[in-house]
Length: 405
Image 1 (tube, rainbow, N blue to C red):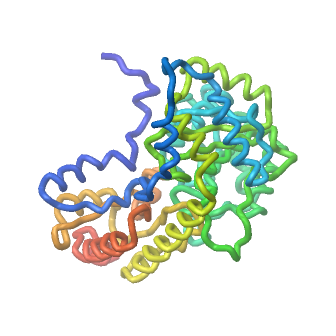
Image 2 (image 1 turned 45 degrees about the vertical axis):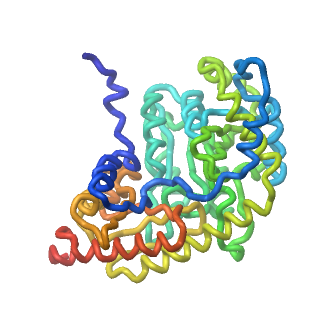
């Protein structure tokens, strides 16, 4: 049977493709600590479920392709609380942040066009680009520099006539890095100079942990480039509602919104019931909930970071935001190591898994000794997972010390 070149070029998710090994481990009676995927164990606010239970209609009809008016109003109000100037007409509701990214790429890219993305990056960015027959051009960052952006001339050298956008995750998945205001100004200058869009994936906006660094700054705060900032958002992480699949994109550009609406109309609409629940999250969730969640993630970050620093040979920086740590391990290949743990290693009948670092890079063979760890479990579980990791590294046949490195 024939398959398209486009689908054959796509890679399986580095976050999900090792799940069968975890399932096999569980079938053998082992408990697996999942630090491989950003699925929080934080409770979803009751307001979400109450709104859906209270929904009454004779028919669950199609909704507007750009989203229910009540939800777009609620999202606009949320943005205004962050001093972001997006009105309801600037918001388009999507099936999660993932669809928002995919729609944005399809709207601005022709086959062969390019998107610059700091590397390492969320693995699905590559899938969204390749599905649109566009290409990711990685902007190099270094763990030794906290994965911050290189100087403007380094980025500028990567711009070609086929470059259409620069995409950033801020706070960053997988590194936890938070962009500085100077970095955002650098990107704004390049966008204006070369007529580029700036795609801002800010689904972790609530999750920054160091007050001394100052308040979070968004690309949406830079007024002179608002017509080229494509804001990507989601309720998944903010309200611990990953399975609801409600996101949005926002932009102060009516022409862009008219174009992306064509794609939204083609897929008809987002689930009405999920939008009703999402509107309640934005309208009724207390500020206390978000403050408590932030404090909990900050404590989890500190717990996991401290435990990792006690493991010989592990190198990592303390992340500033999101809920991930990108750690260098003294192993030959992190994917091989994860599979080995799931198949061959247990501590008191328990094991753990992270996400292989190489899956977050476009450059071949980069990140092979790195692992992304999501601190989405409670603190005692994080301590146990780190203890398993420490013992597993010491026992692993491909440990670099054992290979004489």
